[in-house]
Length: 168
Image (cartoon, rainbow, N blue to C red):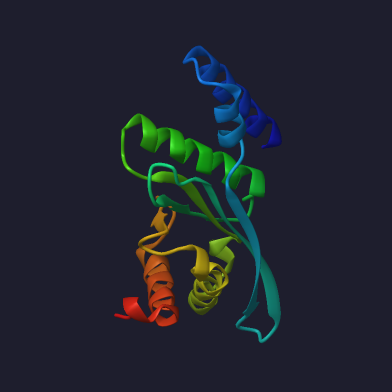
């Protein structure tokens, strides 16, 4: 994945040069402005505690609040999350949508191996870990095709519990 990320940065540099942008623009856009990695302790159904890794990366917010998908996958990496954030920025700017790029990254886990209740605890733990850097005026989480609406509902419920103005 690191090779793909480097290739994406090289393509960005080439395009910006062709468009006549100064090198400073590339220096600003080549890396995310914010990237966090969180550890999420989750009590499993068998009463053990597993630690899951989660990510949230913002490429930039020059065009407005950031928005990006949340992914729950066992092969998710920090580099991939950064790459997805850059691609989201490219998509929104090309379509002139007033959003910056972000990528939820989400949580490194295999949802097929988790129970309904374990998934709920992971969703809520992820939001507890990142709730200060997301929200309707900052960074909007969205779902991709692999995300069940129930997972998003748990995340929204947890967010609303932690942020009183958004309580349902």
